[in-house]
Image 1: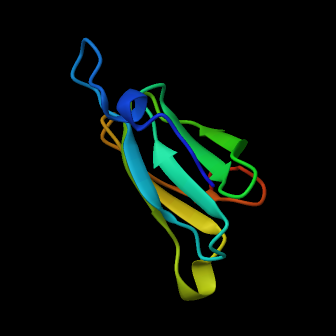
Image 2 (image 1 turned 90 degrees about the horizontal axis):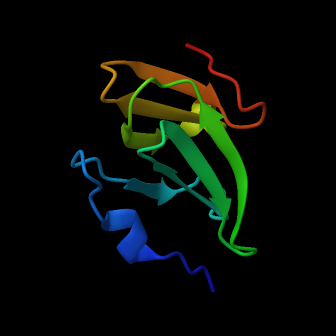
Length: 96
């Protein structure tokens, strides 16, 4: 069973920044969430291990969404740095 410290994820830090949990991935085996450490984290639900941390934002990540249909291997993220970025999950690289 996947177990994360939800209290830790949902607690605000000194700057009122909050981690935001994403949705279950298209394959049903991963979950992603935006973090106040400026990363998007991808975790394996079955092993409860972090697979990747996508880095590129300059402020906390407040929204994430897995791609759909032909974009299954992508994540779209929004940040307090006022940017929206598209990521390739397989490579961990920013596409746009």
